Image 1: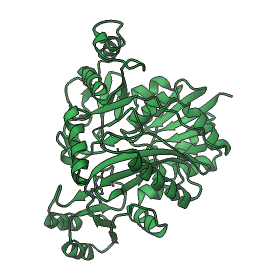
Image 2: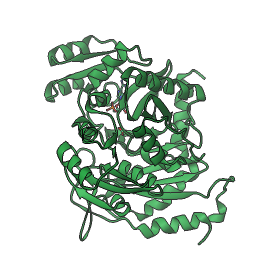
Image 3: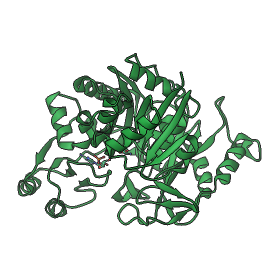
Image 4: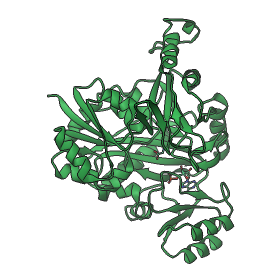
Length: 453
Ligand code: AMP
Ligand code: GLY
């Protein structure tokens, strides 16, 4: 039976989901606040609507006779969109509002970890009284992370000893109007993400990915939603071993057990520290950009996962192509603090195609790239938070588009992503250092140093 899938959300992550379903036996419909040209091209219908309005999303799902839905971003989950779809008889792959609190309420998340004895929880306290929070900052022996309890698009956390001083942390706590915050010990190490597809008690994990949160090269500047990311041809990253990966998987499984009935993606953000794995946070959805690393290498039909989840069946085992990926985002000038929204963006898709032909060896000098028995390197373009209008594509306040290189090694994947970035017109900013051998080596050296090797 052909499924009718409604995809909620219009970012790069959702374009990756749309592409993962493109060869499946599914008619795709999508809705988002912005018209994402990549998704619109793959969909039978694309509706502009407020995805945090459960009534509007459900009405569109019913209009197109959706048999399934995938909810991409956190804001609709926090607004109860999965609940509304489920209640309307459209199975949503995405947690209900109560379970999404694992992401949407960081105070709940930490207390949940404590209550259920989930390994990897840092020392923390939650506060509603900001004077008490400031006292805690003064008295805490060591550096801290200040985390607003609610959603901030990845931009609300401030870390002392890294981005700010303790005096600035107190100022931040006092001057911002957050109602609740979490203060926790600063974790030092290398971050990585593991995303799991979860339903009916099954947990299916995907390769580890490293995101780059900071806005500027060399990990400088403010936090962003993520400027780019890489994964290796194995489940692990070059700075970690199989035991580290398995430790992260154990944490995810413990969370799923404790949540009881969770469905959707559970995303674990981990810090590999000198004392093993610690949890930075959980998200109730695919990562953005991380979805663009893992979905392009997923060989299993994603639709089979969705239908098994809906039908109460065991989820299929996942198979991933042994390919490294490097994703680089192009973001509006001024992102994240003062993004230049409403600016025209150009992406020369022919450049992307030319790069692919070159590496395929069809149209040029691709033969100088080693291919170890796998597929030739390739690049994929993902549109993100841009808005397609009659006369072109315009920036919004968030990330514009991404290119993802796929190859046998991270370094070749990085090279092809860079080649493809020639497609980017003016007015966007890119962290070119992501996935380059120097930066990857720094990560390896950092962990070796932490482990006293
Ligand atoms: P979050 O919004 O929880 O994803 O946090 C954003 C970023 O802040 C993370 O990716 C980390 O880089 C950083 N961060 C969060 N919590 C901590 C912590 N306890 N120690 C150090 N860095 C942290
Ligand atoms: N890349 C981080 C996130 O999706 O939250």
